[in-house]
Amino acid sequence: DQNLLTYDFGTYLAGPNLSFDFSVFNLSSGPGATAPLSLASVSSIGSSTGIELQHLPISGLPSGSSAPLSLVLKRNVFGDFAVNYLLEFSSDGLPSEPAQLITVSGFGRVVLGGDVDVDNDVDGADFLIWQRGMGLGPSATLEQGDANLNGFVTADDLALWKANFGTTAPI
Image (cartoon, rainbow, N blue to C red):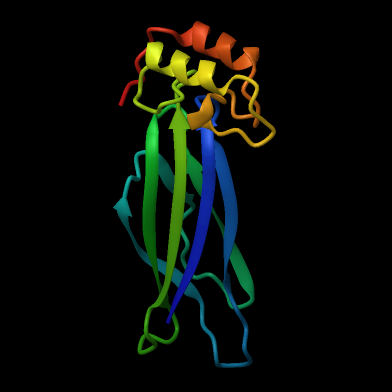
């Protein structure tokens, strides 16, 4: 039995980390039908440097209770991120029961302010995109020159470009 949880953080400028909090539940289905659960293993595929799974140890989670977990988008790491975490839970009191699997997928992008062509630097090519997109809105995209991600291409985006002109994002 496998369950899937997917979360797309979207696109963000550098800044404080963002967290998507969720819980796993050990459902109660009657006397003797459930047992405490423990998180036996966690494996990842993809970019766990940009999106991290955080949790406390989960051991002996009683029937009818839950445990908190978080996906964290690290906004001090630049790039496009996609990661799948496979969480394997074992039944403590019913060892013959098959493992319960949960896949948690996270997606996100962190860009340098002013880098509207998303090539990890703020340069003349970004200015040209801003210039061509000036006045677009209310659903303008980063790639159209919306450097501050508010849906409009304005002088505020130019100010962000100016503030970071010549900067290269560490990757």
